[in-house]
Image (cartoon, rainbow, N blue to C red; front, side):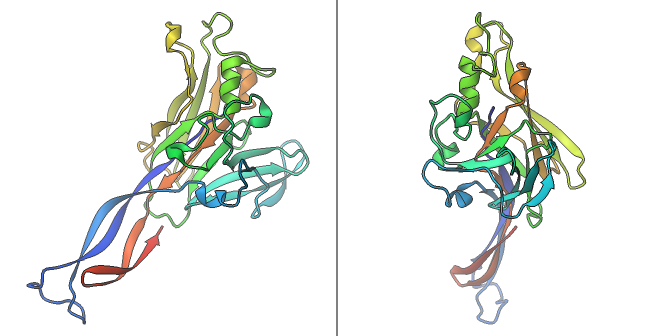
Length: 291
């Protein structure tokens, strides 16, 4: 089943502005500058890698940088990563079964077709903020889907994530299918749920905390409050201080569904430093991103 997400991180932006001429000149051409630092939030989504997709297309592996290994079922798998906008997403693809786990990415807009064959479509019909491409996470594998800060993103900090369900997951919960029950049951009173847990880990692998979010919740005494997330919802993960990677897991009241859970992730973002490399009076000539 599925979730859709968007990550935000903070940083400091650096730029130069001219000082008033009454201050002594500091550089040869007598232009004087003051360094100013401002908060800067950057988004690293899947739009960059999505440029390679055809219309209504997706990529779920194998990745070009992968390593051939023996999988948990004795199959041959390719394990590697997807790089997008300064973040790293894990991906595993089985050469024997054609199955995958970790992250994929897609621009498919089908929000009406039920079933496993439509596993790569976001239920909102597009990415968060009307973006074209979004990531998809398979969260039923022993290896947790993980998004990591690249090694050069010094000082980066996760801020928030926008999440939703995939079409396959949402329609399965709303209507039931051959694998899973209809949430709420025939009476509507069954206390069903689909829970996303995001765990932050630091550079040593230690947990720095977790954040929970219900992608579906039918536990209310008042059935009119029951819901399946159908749009994009923002989760604050800024409290996971020191996290250099985020791991995703899903749990459900319907244990038959838990083995086929999917997650969709959109627009991960991270902080970086934008630093001036050269400047002239009244303007900036060269800016480089140091991440």
